[in-house]
Length: 248
Image 1 (tube, rainbow, N blue to C red):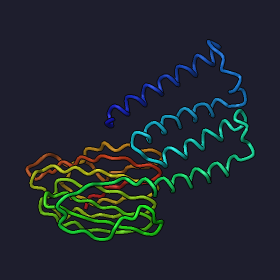
Image 2: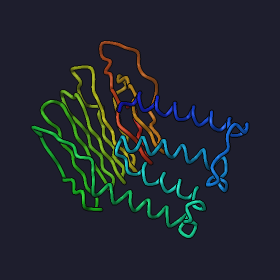
Image 3: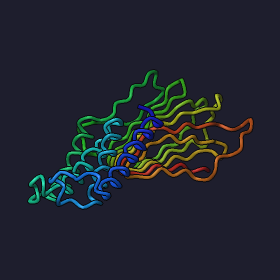
Image 4: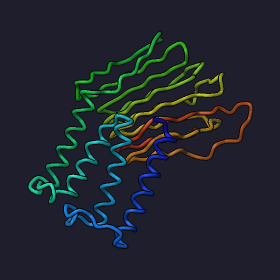
């Protein structure tokens, strides 16, 4: 499901939520008795958490699944009869499950004809791990977890990049690359981490990143189209993290 379809789905759910709230307050219908102890804001937050969960299942972002589930459990703790374990036990359990599922079911990336590779990704380790590779077709892959790392790319025919950061911070510099095709695609996956991408001033960024409890910030305005302009298609997802594009 692409970025546009997810936005449409979210918009429809929010419109339905607004309509239900208005009709409820106008006594058009009554809520089931199970919701008697839940405030209006609690119901709104629960619906928003459900939207986050749907997005996160689509993107396979575990942080956007377990944490919102914990929030819903806290809101409905009395109807569910789990007040003895809310809020802290539920929140801690959600965080532990998020970490566990990220380690057991990491995102796998397949690359061919690697020019060079450094480090290794160990999906069952909670220690710092870094992996970097670049193939002859101008595709770059960079992954880091449980730590901080920096890479300077010197590719002469950059076409695409796949970046993944979980429970850590990554900085990658594209300011010295060449893009003969004038277009480049960057796919980012951020979970409980931060990615800083440094790009040239002449790159125009088309942002299609989905954000869940995080931020995607692009420095400066897009430049005017010239013969030297490069169009960068930014895709992926951010869950409980930050993605920053800095023009240098």
